[in-house]
Length: 314
Image 1 (tube, rainbow, N blue to C red):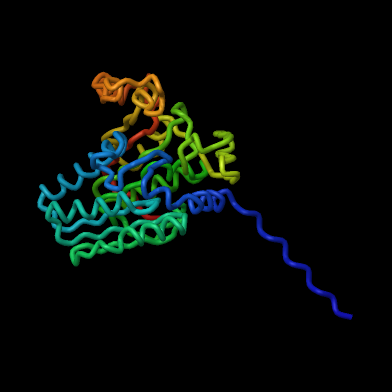
Image 2: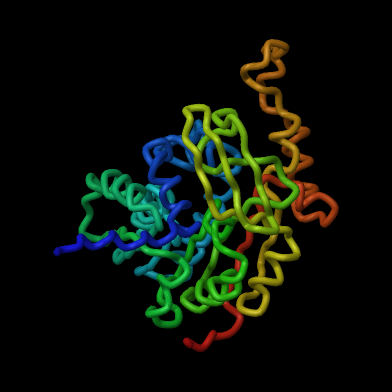
């Protein structure tokens, strides 16, 4: 008598895998949006959001400073690169500035995001630029790299938000260790407006953020149920995380007032004058960007870290 073998019980799906699956499901949308909000394909150009332009100003400033100092080669890492928009624009800008040897690496936990990155990069043909995209988890992607492997390291938008809290310190240490000149990171804030990360928030039927559990659950309007690792940061928490490893040149809030007070384009009460940019909001943003009373109310926190000491490899 023969008995058929019972199928082995399947391994439970981790929150990390669920997060990757959520981004896989909406990867194509990230070609014209960042953090669930519309953006231009050229992140610093006309049509891009104010936050994108502010982030790009820091990236561009670092590239300009390095070129002005006489550097002709540059290596850039985008940790959690999504569809590669930031990295592609950064290497193109480096070439425009006159760098002759440019290496760019980008990795993401979402395989579909890397597919999109390869598609975007296919027309980038320049013998001075070497570009590589691959699937990897930031929790362990950099451990085999040498100290100071990259001149500039980017870790933008929600990458750190999607890490379990117990991994924060190790990842901050690793990102700092492999960075030679400038580490630029952004995160979503604990007191900022809500987000569902992968789509504009009006595409959700219901959502729940549990910061203690480090988890977000979303029911989308199209019927999909998403679960993601989600931890929201305060400015003090972000500072404590990176301060042991880098000199923090900037820790500021991006979009404290604009999203809350700018008129909505779909709101019928708008007038031609209200559709124009409000210089008062820009002035308030500049004045209070680093004010402890306001910074945690921002949509994003921006951290620029400069090397302070060489961090020994583990």
